[in-house]
Amino acid sequence: MSAVQAISPMVGSPGPLGRVWRYRELLRELIVRNLKVKYQRSLLGFVWTFLNPLLTVGILVLVFSHVVRIPLPDYWAFVLSGYFVWNCVLQTLNTGTYIFAEHSRLTRSVAFPSEILVFGAAGSRLLELVAEIMLILVLLVAFHHHQVPSSFALLPVLLVIQVLLVIGLALPIATLSVFYYDVHHALPIALTTLFYLSPVFYPADMVPQAARPFYFLNPIAGLLTLYQEVLYAGRMPSATLLFGMIAAAFLVYFIGYAIFNRYASVFPEIV
Picture 1 (spheres, rainbow, N blue to C red):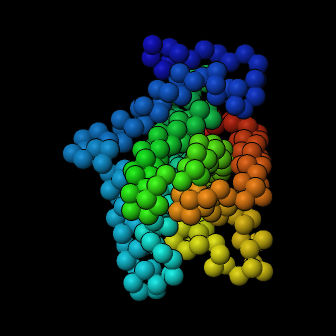
Picture 2 (cartoon, rainbow, N blue to C red):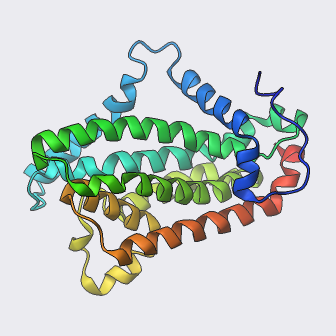
């Protein structure tokens, strides 16, 4: 059954996550399509998923372990533990700036919840991230921990937190992009700022104690710290950080969805 055939007119409103589940077959086909389009006519194909981030990690490790010299043992392991997560966030949020315009014909001609497009973009990146994390786990076990830390069992929880958080941020970005093309120009600046305000290449412990409450108002900082605790340090994160991020992820998701839902009905008239 094709994606279009799988769509039926919506009856009622079962809620934000319920609406997505109701159109899960369309979501699956969008995820598969996104991956096929991304790697078509590419000699290396899926290898680019690992290659581009690994090259960036190599540069960060070279600069911050031999030039700036951040004092962390196995600095490469620290960067690996967070950079792939950051790259996933970056790409998903960037997708939000054009996702509705790219599928404008579909949204105008077929009745389906348009948030599915954002979920599809996030889902395809999540699959890539899972493959990347599998490689990272092998490297960390072989060359950093020399065993399998029990904290690795927490990774599915971190992935759920990340999905909710990123979709909650991508939905309002996609919404604003429909009305204001300025978002296309402003988002790269905002993401570059966020890169330096998040513990991608330095640990959050380096932030002055007095500034940390403000620093962790950035939910990406908390997300990366969770991954670094679980992957690099190989220990369970504090309950305060873990449950605080779970609450933050749900809060960001529902606020983002509320903003999106307020204007979603007019998207087909504009894009």
